[in-house]
Amino acid sequence: MIRVVIAEDQQMLRGALTSLLRFEPDIEVVAEVSDGKKAWEVIRSHQPDVCVLDIEMPGISGLEVAEKIRDEQLPCKVMIVTTFARPGYLQKAMDAQVEGYLLKDEPIDFLIESIRKVMEGQRMISTDLAAALFIREENPLSKREVEVLRLANEGMTTNTICKTLFLTKGTVRNYLSSAIQKLGAESRQQAVKIAEEKGWI
Image (spheres, one colour):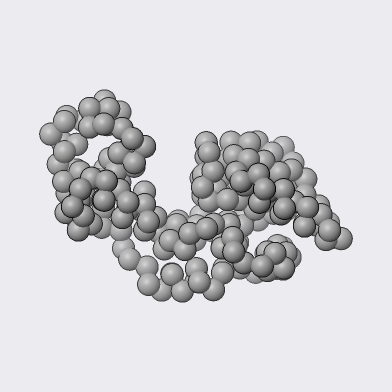
């Protein structure tokens, strides 16, 4: 039996995946959870063969869970599922050495086949995502610019960003200005949107 954990914050999709996988004679869903924190807890306690992780979840993202699995050297195979064909996300997933990276609009049969194939040692990537690897843009932002944009994306004001990162207001403004310029944006909001769409924040 292939023991699987499913972590997906959309209840209907999670329920559908769980129900369909339970029809398979060689697959057992040992847990299904709605956020990254719970996913990490059940992965550590259940020690599944495969975990299917949504990339964007409350608490901890699927990519962060994947990195934790690798850091602790757990034997679990990792499959990321996503709505977004973002090159930045895909590169992070490859860096985390995930075994599968699939788009959510793939047929369920492809997911089931992928679970079996990663158990055999293969790596599975949706065709559209594989194409994104070849057109991948390098992230022009510095680490600090990424941090500042990420906090701005969370709705923080310049003052709150200053306090969070222990920087002066002028320094934060410089980072924002630099990021806006590098991304060819016209505003902080547009810079955040561009960086997010490319998977850089």
